[in-house]
Length: 337
Figure 1 (cartoon, helix red, strand yellow):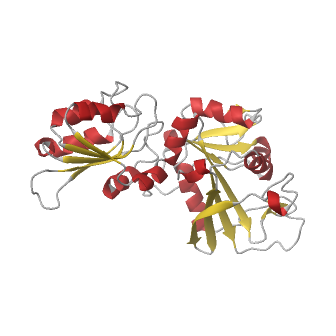
Figure 2 (figure 1 turned 90 degrees about the horizontal axis):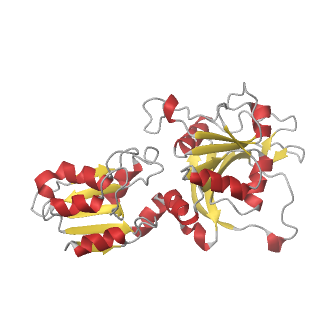
Figure 3 (figure 1 turned 60 degrees about the vertical axis):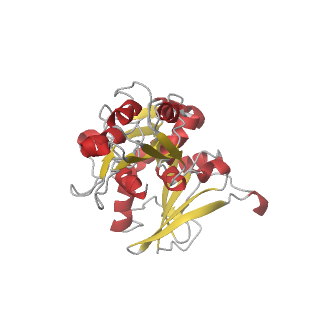
């Protein structure tokens, strides 16, 4: 299952709005360490199970198939994966997670069992739950998984009093932020950020980077408010109003992960309304040394210590001279990812 998860990790930015799934076929006959793997293709292409089974060929008969997500049993853009599994002669299927999509949701497992295939569910569940967090969240709520990205000095400031902020963090942290963009279906900022910084909001990575994106593979650019026609962020989707309605709209468009890169006002709005599923904070060894520099959030915060937001740190990584801290809310729903 770990290998299947590794295979899925190679296509996290290629399959949306479908889940990024990995599969491994282990032959029933003794072939040493030989096994066959597959990952979900871009929309319209074969799912991971079919790719792995085609690679295995006749060796799929009497084999064990490990797959990170429950195989589908319905006709979509591609035929049901369960039919391919049964036809191949697989004896046993090991599934990490049941698919919460209403079109699947246990039907794939039931279909395999009805055909006489042994099914085991739950192996590697925590690993895969983390990997598929955006997909699982979207299927359960209809909204994107929201990642709020911020960069700040050690004293919690994002820009000088005159608004200048390039560059607080170093090159390695900025490259990591581009990889975060590459894993997201959409990038959101406020109209104020567009007017002040004129960002392009594109993924800019070397061609040899596995997460590099071409001109036609860029994330959807979303701006809260109106965008000047000559802005670097054009073409962009302009939205306004209630943030919950904004997320609902993006969810209907098939956005599984939304990266919020807005300034302190937008960051405060998402944070204060409890709409952030994951926080990514880049901290640079920089001190503005005063209270007039711009903060991470603009707006009212907790009135007392009992009201402060508390989360859990998921990881802390050194990137050149900077630190990357990833953290999440402590609510039960935040356990995904």
